[in-house]
Amino acid sequence: MLIGVFFSPRFQERIALGTEVPPLLPWQSVGGCGEARSPTSGVPPSPVWPDEISPKRRLGVQSLMRVNLGQDFFSYEFTPRLTGFVHPRVLCGISLPIISSIGIVQPFTNVAPRYEVNSGLGDIRLDGRVQIIDSDPLLFHMALQLPTGVYDRSRGTIGRELFLPSIMQPGLGMYVLTATFSHIRNLSPKDQVHASVEWVHPFQMRLADGKNEFLDDRFEMYSAETSNKRFYYRFKHYGENDLGRYIPPELRINVRYSHDASEIFRHTWATTVAFPFGVQWIPDAIPYTYAPHPDPDHRMWRSTWYYIPELRFRSIGVIGFVAIPLNDKANDQTYGDRYDSKPYSKFDGPDWESLLHTYSLGVGIRYRFLKLGD
Image 1 (tube, rainbow, N blue to C red):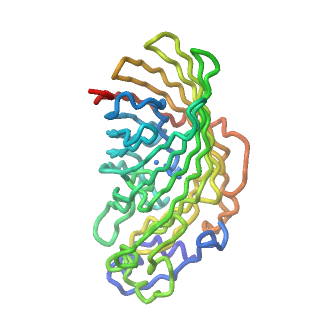
Image 2 (image 1 turned 60 degrees about the horizontal axis):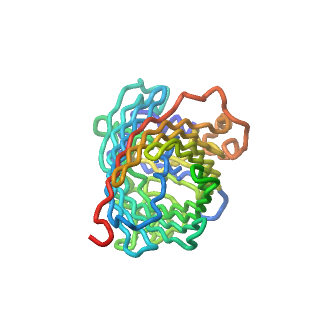
Image 3 (image 1 turned 180 degrees about the vertical axis):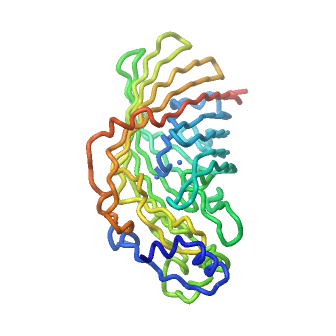
């Protein structure tokens, strides 16, 4: 009944005029009370570029271009990246993704489906890598993703706006810290295995003003909630943005096998498996209500399978890739209660019926320069 009132155009108009204050609906899965573009909302993560261990060429520039295709969704990503060895054992980098997406949007059954387009700068990523052991290299990698991308794009007329889905937003609206240990082992002069374990931890900060970014416009009816950490906070150790989207921390296991077919050509087969520690939540589609709910597309495990051919020259590398996701089966929400996260916290077998419904294709190029000793 309450949800039906939220969806009515008259109620939306009353909220827009400030004459109706909706109740703050419960969220049982945040703040330690219960339950990471992955944080990618179903889009397969890009493959990791084969490691460069040697600092013989200190600087590098690269770009990765990819398209993600689904049954009702298409996106294009272009990510330039700059890397440099600041020490023979330490490599640092910065990545700036530019994202454009188009998809069919129908948040409610009483709203006609329509195509929407969105694009912009995504979340900038800073990273650093330290080589701990030389023989059979052991590496430690840290990365910080900054909330530089827009995450609140909406469409529609005044008083009847609706947020675009999270998958179509260039940014997450939160910080993401990733810690990785990786190990490289040469099986033969032509064969190599790379294994890594990642811990991905989203979190949020408002150190300057200490309040929700949208409290003065979209959510001004909640300004009296001074004791509620959703609207007044300096730091959240969990990943909830100011619209109510929540991304749980997750563990990722990556395995990559490479074979050198010749001096300049290499095949790589890789897989990534991610296990989120909780259920992801998404904002309500109505911009003037704070009513996040479990993401119907959330999966308790996700995997991506890659094939990556690579051409290698002295200072130039070129890769292509195809990425195919395989996840556990989706579960239907509790009848009459879209705020119940229990159905989405179940582990199921592979969803073979959705195989090839979504996939990614991409190509990348890298140039390394400033040779040591020049």
